[in-house]
Length: 214
Image (cartoon, rainbow, N blue to C red; front, side, top):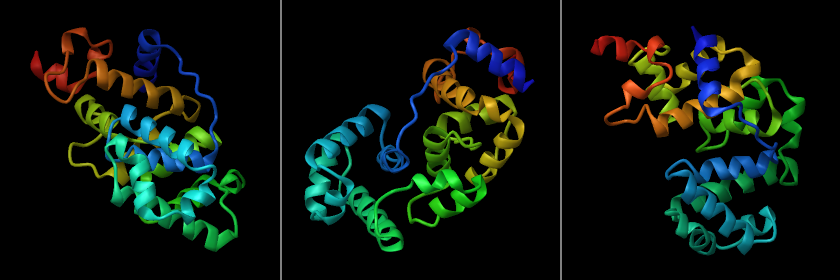
């Protein structure tokens, strides 16, 4: 069934093409996205990189200054504190701010390393590995969690960590990027949190929720 779902979503939304990013940049962007939408997190990232010439400058700045830079994205002191603590811990461990060494680790080693930072959970770690390292990690965000439960791919009481494990076993690794992005697109356009557009859904034939309505 998963292959049919992937095929139908690609037919409707296309096969995503994403430029590979720097792992540390991706980590900071994903942290910025944790409590807001994409538009706000991207605005906050742009303001942060315009305000500071490097991550070293972000690390050494006053927290208040960092918080002001990301405030236009709806973020503030808590996120600024989290970012600075991660940067300081990374610098303390390695003497520099660089996560490209993750590409040399196994996926599990890289996940464990990233999740050793406070505020970095399974989804954030998987985003860094998938988008920056093209590693076999499948991030499960709120859209994917919701759609997965509705379709019957995930149990209704599944935890975030378990949801990642299930999806990584279920989805072919070469389709992690495609399905991750297309499920998010589908969640925004059709399988919404409230009043999902089931009659317009391209994967309704494979959905347990839709079948329950018949």
